[in-house]
Length: 247
Ligand SMILES: [Zn+2]
Image 1 (tube, helix red, strand yellow):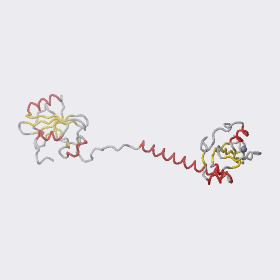
Image 2 (cartoon, rainbow, N blue to C red):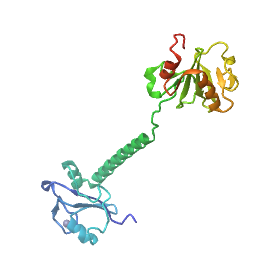
Image 3 (spheres, protein in one colour):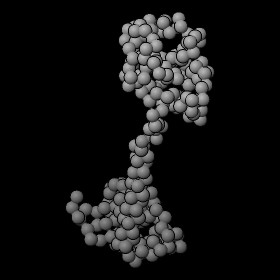
Image 4 (cartoon, helix red, strand yellow):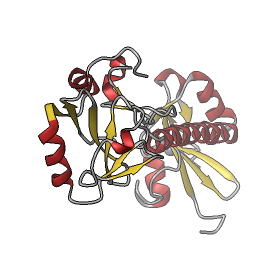
């Protein structure tokens, strides 16, 4: 498109009392509806729709208006004054207003995008060496809290109360190993159970089950007077007793 190609900038409308003169040579009509603002070379023309059609062949000849789409924008009195006396300033105003609207739309889009990519806040595991279970029962702490930081979250435990008064808990490690942990712990726990249960692991403070887990469980069951498989620490405490020195 050369600079001389006419360009339809806008179709505007003013109040009938503020109608403007059509710029088509020989036409001395005033117009107020469907005023076509056309840029032709360096010239800005304000044309009535009839003269626009005459001049360019038909109403669609120049395509869609650059500003405000194809809809007639109703001008304010101030804008109408610009249309009549300084069409250039009016077009500049259109451009500025549209730039502002574009920027607003862009900002809105950007904030929507940011909201969409913002990470959903997640409940983090406590940094203290305590594993909560389930996360929702934090209000039950400390009775709702399992005391093993290495425990695999979301697994159940089995509590065994022995006839001799000792308590043992089968707990799964995060790395899937099973441990039989004395609860509460006591001196000599590492010599209390036979190898069929497992091998003492001093770092964990319990027996690491080496052989088949059901065999180890069968031994514990044989010696237990009470047993509870649960995911709730309070139920472990109920089986093994609520000793005041538990920490
Ligand atoms: Zn005219």
